[in-house]
Length: 98
Image (cartoon, rainbow, N blue to C red; front, side):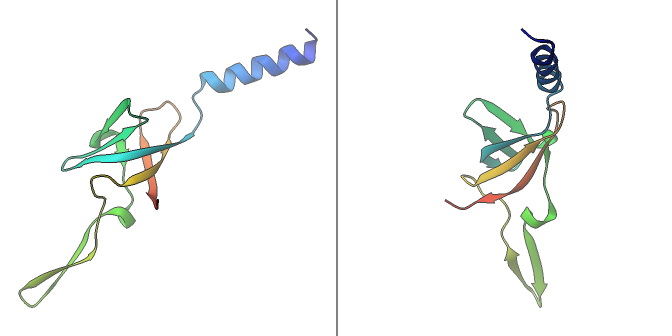
């Protein structure tokens, strides 16, 4: 193995060991509290999830009536996640339309 090949191998191993950001798909399995299942093997509780405001339920009161302007995540929704370096936190980017 040449020196260049060895350097490439060392670099690739270093990146892999550092757990860089990864894109994953998951499915919402519970909304209260929020839980997302990834690849049918990893269940992520709310403590590990970062949810943007755009995916939260929005309500407004008009008179004595409450109206939902935007529904939040629902059970069964497929979502795109970003795993931060180290794998401790997962950012939900958006819902996936199937």
